[in-house]
Image 1 (tube, one colour):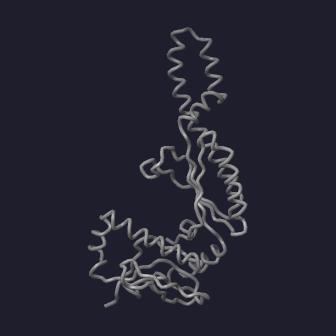
Image 2 (tube, one colour):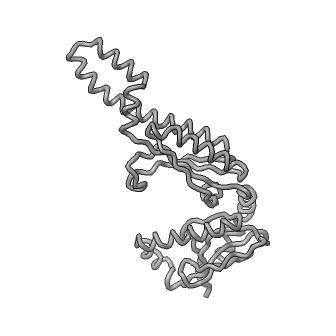
Image 3 (cartoon, one colour):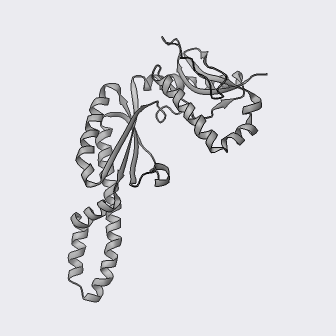
Length: 265
């Protein structure tokens, strides 16, 4: 009976370097490659008794196991990425055997070859923008022209109407603060996207995920030619220095394997 096959990613065939010795996700079987013509699958074998569907479901309901194994998956991909152009697979991509894997490779092989060519010589970088919400609200309350106009309008009202309209003013400040978050972040994204061959805007994370006190205002990813990375990072550093005192925090991480720009359905 075929062993289960865990798929880490796809690399070009006939690469000059062999993959380094690494243990697979089960910490027992080694990681190795299976050739499919112009490409190779980076895999490890798994014991069916331990990783068939029922057992795997139990494992993935254990968050400690998921954290440990997801970290292994990422670290293995990072090691491979330092040596090869690689299409990274999602965590826990498992096939019932070599025939099952081969069917998938044959179906998607032209797209895989195309993607390997597209991402060769490029790096993926992620930018997240956070803000000190209270500080931003203060700035909006002081400098926003819409707020200033509303205050002038309120001053002309009777005392009773002023009380009601001042309560509405707080809501307006909240709305204008949200607009400023989107406007500021979008402008920065457009600025940094000029250095990229492709970019994508992702969902923001809440504080439970980020673990930060500041709100996340933006989450985007960029595919950069290696020759543009230095200029990209220099512009990010300028923006960090310029806007930190105003309550904006710009975080950039990378380079990463092409998680976002080499997806295969």
